[in-house]
Amino acid sequence: QLQLQESGPGLVKPWETLSLTCSVSGGSIITSDYYWGWIRQPPGKGLEWIAIIYYTGNAYQNPSLKSRVTISADTSKNKFSLRLNSVTAADTAVYYCARVGLAAADIHAAFDIWGPGTLVTVSS
Amino acid sequence: QSALTQPPSASGSPGQSVTISCTGTSSDIGRFNYVSWYRQYPGKAPKLIIYEVTKRPSGVPDRFSGSKSGNTASLTVSGLQAEDEADYYCSSYAGNNIRVFGTGTTVTVL
Image (cartoon, rainbow over all chains, first blue to last red; front, side, top):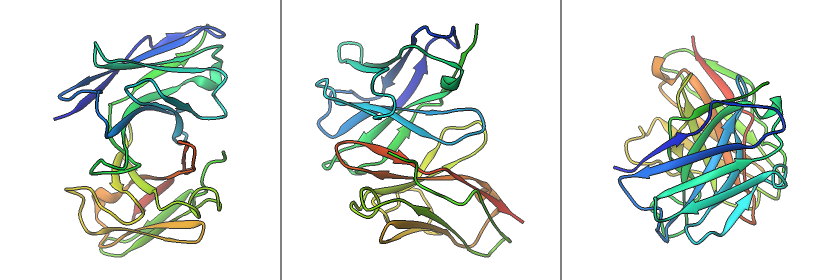
């Protein structure tokens, strides 16, 4: 059974870089059928899509965050990561990693498996 | 890419039906049949309940159904149960590998 788990610092100072990792177990990120992505949710607010990546490294970001976001994949460790630079209080949120199906997948174009999420607070 | 628009709240009595709308544009919902819906309990990760507008993942009861007309998608929960009280989010593919979420709707079971 595929499981995703986010990890990283829970507190980041303003204007520094937020770094998170999503560890995937019970399956490989090397698959032609899925992207791997990040979504965030500020406290009391809605979901915001951040970015997705294919195991080959092809990546796509939310245009509103693109200048600050880097997403990468480490196939040797079966993980993928998010870096968000120059953070402010507005970046305080629960960050989720999730799997997104491609056309060949049983579930296409939807986030079908999610990690439990990790709260990142931006504060000095 | 702007968030899809959902009503902030919806409610119904046990056994009744509630329908949640999700309004986008001709560049997302109106163009692609890749609308998905998620249920989220407080403090928990979202769970996929509808994908490709109308399809249900294995294990999701058929009380949940989806539809689309023009730039608006809808989720209907029939036979409301206490466990359906949660936040619901829609999402759509918007081309060029871009995804967008809705603003979210809190469903209350009266």
